[in-house]
Length: 73
Figure 1: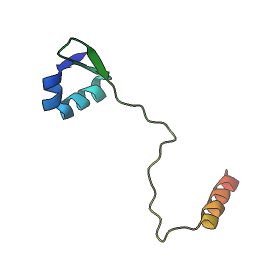
Figure 2: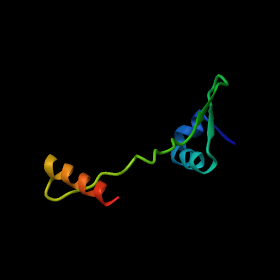
Figure 3: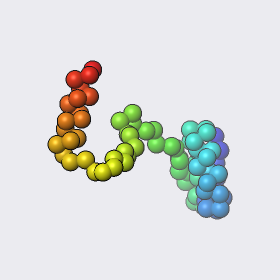
């Protein structure tokens, strides 16, 4: 596990975050010796991106689309 000083963390934040992503966790050690863990947050399978719909759909159109999708299953 990699440990950064607070000064290194400030200078190399993007490197610190990339290592946290690759290794699962990195630590930042404060001047007083206290350590903090930095870990990537796991994403929920329900976390979906935004969908652009042109033109914007009305609430009735959204409900109809959901119902049609459920009927196909």
